[in-house]
Each structure stands twice: as C-alpha cells, then as structure tokens.
Image (cartoon, rainbow, N blue to C red; front, top):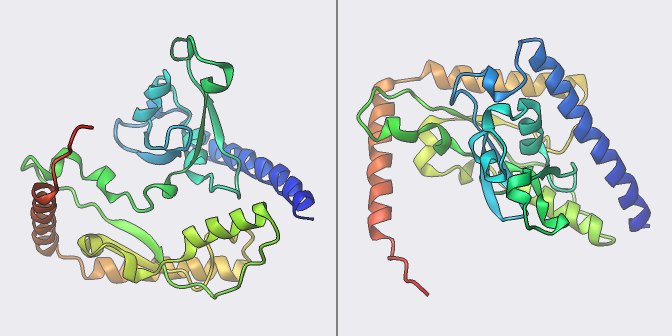
Length: 255
C-alpha cells in the first residue's frame, strides 16, 4: 500500500517542482530577469543544500563548484533548488561541466540539491558580510520568520515513505518563536502562522488572506517601533558575542 502511494507521490512532486519553476520563470521574465546576470551583483542570495556532498550552497556564487558560471545560472532554477523540500519535491539534479566531470564515473557527474532550510533555515548571516566588520555605514538586515505552533496531528507511519514524510514535516514544523536565536531577535519580524503548516500547499482563499494579514500586521508592528540606535547597539553586542565564542572555541587538532 505504501509502495503504490509512494509511486504516485514521486510522480506528483516532480510535476509540482517543474510547474513551480516554470511559473517563477514566467513572472521574472515579465520583469526582464532570467539569469543572475540580469540582477545587480549581491542583490539576491539563495541558499540550497547539496546532499551529494553534504554542504550548504549560497547561490549564485557556489554554483561554480560544479564548473558553472554564476552569472549564467537561471534564477528560477535557483529558487526551485531552495524550495525543494525533501519528499514533497524532487531534488534538482545538476550535472557538472565537462571539465569538472573529467575522469569521474557517470553517476558521480551529478549533484542532487534540495531545500536550503535543511542546513540553514534562517540565514541572516548571508547579508551581514563585510559591512558589519569594516566600520562602513550599516545597512540594516531584517529577517521575516514564520513562527507558531501547529495543531498536533499524529502521523500514520505505514512504511519507509510515510516515515520519511513524517520526519520532514517534523523538521519543518516542530519549532516556535522560542527557538529564534536570541542573538537575532532584535532584527526578526515574527509572523504567526495561524496553525498552518509549511507543507499545506492547497490553501483556501480565507486561509491565504489570513496569512497575508498576519504578515502585514507583524511587519507594521515591527517597523512602527523601529529604532536605528537600538539596532546599532544590538548589532555591536552581537559582534562582540560572536568574537567571544570564536576566541573560546577549542583549537582544531590535526588527525
């Protein structure tokens, strides 16, 4: 029973992934955007998880690991990589360039990429960069985080596929606002999810409207209380705490 259902899910999620990528590409092309070359450098950074090598990818720059020019990377493809929640969407398969594939077995020429949230679910660090370390004018970095508990519905595990689904859903939903790192609270807009799971793709108009209003309300409340002086003070405190942790970390011992 689980095997039959699994086959149907595999076929459906592949279609969903391709449809999502196609829709995003269509929306971007209306704005004259196709590849990262069409965007200002550093304007858009996207995280994804390279499960073939067990590393996080920051796109577009890290695509060069596979011999691909970052400027030629399709933006819609990168977004699909970052949205490819394991089990719910098929992984995006990247083939290394001929130069990088030389001498490799056929199966080793491919890399499988999934949702960046698997390794870094709230990567504010992406946009800090050198500007927080070199005394430059600080450009505020604010994150938007969907938070809140969802209603507990016991998973029915009938086999390996349903178990995998339960594992992924737990990874995505088993957190609330208490787990936002204290170090980033001052720059996080917390948006209540109203009990809606990240994997609920078929929302009613009522639910989607409620989520929109939840985000708009959270954003208004956050920015109505915005204080740049407080931000600068908290950012300075954050940097000092990070330096302290780095100094206290035990040295790496060669093995």
